[in-house]
Amino acid sequence: MPRTLYEKLWDSHVVADLSPQQKGGDALLYIDRHLVHEVSSPQAFQALRDAGRRLRRPETHLAVADHAVPTRSRGTIADPLAAAQVAELEANVAEFDVPYRRLDGEGQGIVHVIGPEAGFTLPGITLVCGDSHTTTHGAFGALAFGIGASECGTVMAAQCLKQKRAKTMRVELIGTLSQHVTAKDIALAFIARVGAMGAAGYAVEYAGPGVAALSMAARMTLCNMTIEAGGRIGLIAPDETTFAYLEGRALVPRGERWRQAVAYWRTLHSDGDAVFDTVVVIDLGDIAPHVSWGTSPEDCAPITASVPDPTTIIDAGARRRLEKALAYMDLAPGTPLQAIAIDRVFIGSCTNGRIEDLRAAASVVAGRCVADGVTAIVVPGSTATKHQAEAEGLDVVFRAAGFEWRHAGCSMCVAMNDDRLFPGERSASTSNRNFEGRQGPGGRTHLMSPAMAAAAGIAGHLVDIRNLGAPVA
Image 1 (cartoon, rainbow, N blue to C red):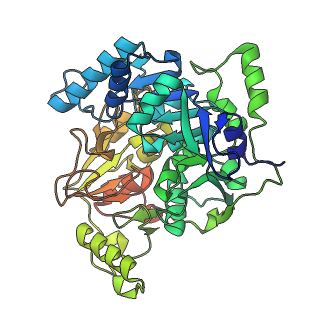
Image 2: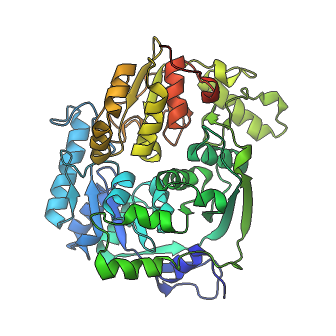
Image 3: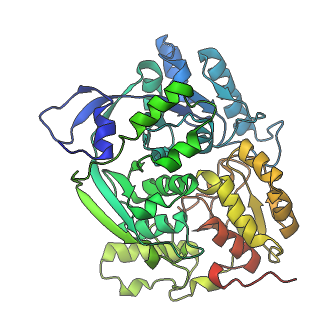
């Protein structure tokens, strides 16, 4: 029978079918890899300790501190809660022999950045993490999804998880992206189209000529944002771009094992006559740079648009949600998006903190200066990315423009560390969520691509990068 990529990955990891007579039922899946961080792991380690268990396969786990860590410096952590979380993680990984990337080491960074960088993420595997943006790793053709803290403990002890088989959605990308339009804009346009729960219950596979043209960084951005449409799994079939990215990385097979791996990875694609439950077609040529205006990633529009008017919404529930979002964001209906002033810029996160993202932002700010009254920070997704950017001189470009250059971490993507918005502040952010309080209590977040965020920092307001003009000499 013809199968989709998701079905091939699922079938190859089923240990036991728990509901053989039910389509889309439960199964026990074998889990190949597990990423561990300081926020979601303490309960899992304690469960092992209480049960007197060890990790079944310690070498299949990789731990790092990323969510709560400060990005201004590497040394003593001033915040007592963050210091305690990192100290507990270090004690746990030492006790249970889990491979660990130290905070002051070259391998540190956001879990969803260092996994691919190290070659820990590979096509054909199952990979989990106590973080919803584990969808990122599906860009390599891995069956990757976020799990809860108790499930982390189950994976540690048994290397298996009970899961429900998802429906399948194919997102066919056709056409060609216009200049200054990126994978982040594709993701925001897709979420705006299907809604924040439009992909709930689906494994989403991005396919078509538009996907083949994307870099691995762009593919990771696209898969990362799948969860914002409600889908726990985002997938892209591995191809020559994937293999070129992986070859030679620290944890990737070498020699004959590499050749055997690539031969298998080439089989990981949806069969030509495979049937999907839902198909969505997106013409990339129709997409403009997008920004969010509300408190859900589905609240997005082209930068040329205006804030919507709740009175035009017929459904009462949707109208009330829109009214609430605009009240929180302090935006009036009909306001042109380009008229919205900002206070802060955040470039980073597991969505857009890779070297390609930093290069794109640096190309915008070169020869320009951050607008008066705007505070802007750049936070690389990993220490390795930070050092690569410094070797290329990107840090010099950012500093000359008035941006702060930071150490790696989740930073302002989530208000679990020192980097956060104050009440009422408005940010142009390259992160993945614009929920109420996501970047700090009372903070207002506008999601966009790195180049668009950099442009907003220069202009002092949301701006169409296509109209930014040349730097002032």
